[in-house]
Image 1: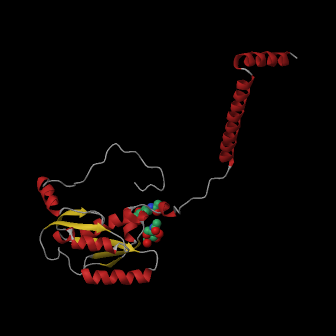
Image 2 (image 1 turned 45 degrees about the horizontal axis):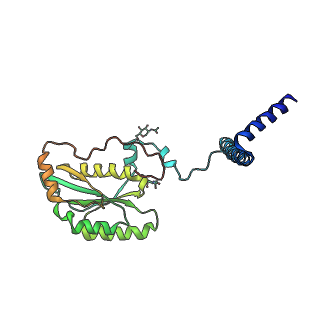
Image 3 (image 1 turned 120 degrees about the horizontal axis):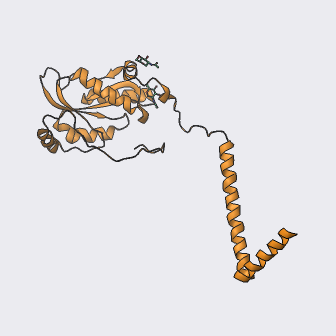
Length: 226
Ligand SMILES: *[C@@H]1O[C@H](CO)[C@@H](O)[C@H](O)[C@H]1NC(C)=O
Ligand SMILES: *[C@@H]1O[C@H](CO)[C@@H](O)[C@H](O)[C@H]1NC(C)=O
């Protein structure tokens, strides 16, 4: 009885304060907020209880042995230039090795036609995961024609970029140890060879040159490749 009485008094006071119409509107808004909150809470509870969603991508390769030596031991060199700018030369100031992939023929063509003419330039790639035989033939023909392809026996995939980079270092060390500098440059980057020469002249003693990116956070979004 007392509680009832109490509610009546509160109702009466609210009605005096807002008037009947406003009070109804207020109660409706409160009901709406309560309903949305309830749905949100229910959603959180269900999410906490539900089993984890299936993995969007196959992550098994991340569980492999990540030792670089182990990584490289298992990859065979398939195609390489029969002779390079380094063969029989005592010192090579700079060679550029471009990580690329089988389907990016057009990119390589542009590099060959432009900045690639101005310093020794080689392309390193793996094998396409699809239509392997067909792609190998195309790659072989391209290698024969231009003599600048280095092809290793691994699946050319974005997630194998570390492998590609390690192979790039390994190939250069083995085949062109006399190179003073190795330039790793993507196939979609336009290089100004004259400016590069100036920069190198200004940093003659540098062991490593590059652009330092600082104050950046981690990208946790699995679809963000940055
Ligand atoms: C990973 O490979 C390296 C080099 O082959 C080897 O020494 C090491 O024991 C391996 N680690 C595991 C966990 O298999
Ligand atoms: C990377 O290359 C290895 C060797 O060919 C292959 O087994 C692996 O599946 C490749 N990774 C991806 C993500 O394709």
